[in-house]
Length: 327
Image 1 (spheres, one colour):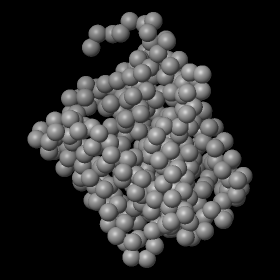
Image 2 (image 1 turned 120 degrees about the vertical axis):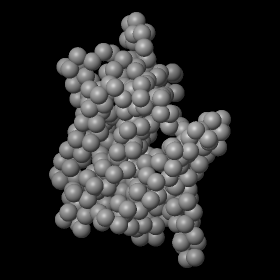
Image 3 (image 1 turned 180 degrees about the vertical axis):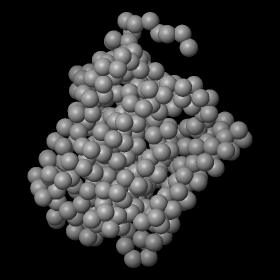
Image 4 (image 1 turned 60 degrees about the vertical axis):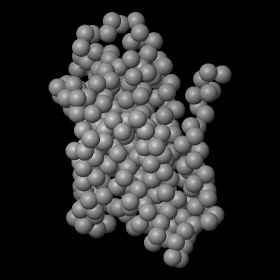
């Protein structure tokens, strides 16, 4: 029963599915669509402003010195995953509905998560300080690397314009840096209101999902998406996650990392950020494409949480038997 409870979807995943269904039945059309787009732009900027204000500079400094660990996470996130995504798109594109293969590639180009990477590392008894630094750096770098890599791999489809990258900088990176610069004055206020900031984070994502799936419904995505596509997509997500988990685990042991460091590498290197992926997609791609693009990400997000919840429990038993090194 304890194992089965881990497989139960969390509330946010249920909210994502409910939002997608609501958008499919009642999409934003007419004058409501541009108004919703403006609200989304503002909510995304606020989301990353608050993320910047929450990010502790001390935690970054403590974890930054472990450069070998960060290099491993970077390689998994921005080298291994993109190679797997490119291979998947190349060989399976003809078997999937239009846009889904591109969504798989986009998923593989995204940065790691922050919250779940750190949470699972902590549950498993891993190197939390290094996980904080590595996951945070991945998110900041991903704001620039994701669109650049996407543009490089999409050359045959026109690529990603510099204008789109500029929009990402203005809507995501600038608010993030501004929030971090203001952290000495607003950081404690933000930390004391985690419920409010969590609502902003999740609310911004739900707004984008509603807009994206509404546009997808208007464009007829669900008529083009067969049940076979969903089954194949779930299998691909499981295979991608499994390959990365096995590779990061074996590489960590091959290069002589401790178990605590291995935990941080495995959990930070195997995650893909829904929080960053949905807002970036809303800027990079036309509204009619976003639903198909983020569908693989939504499925992968749930699968990675389920698998890593089980894996964290297994690691916790190992790390509990090992002495914690002095900081």
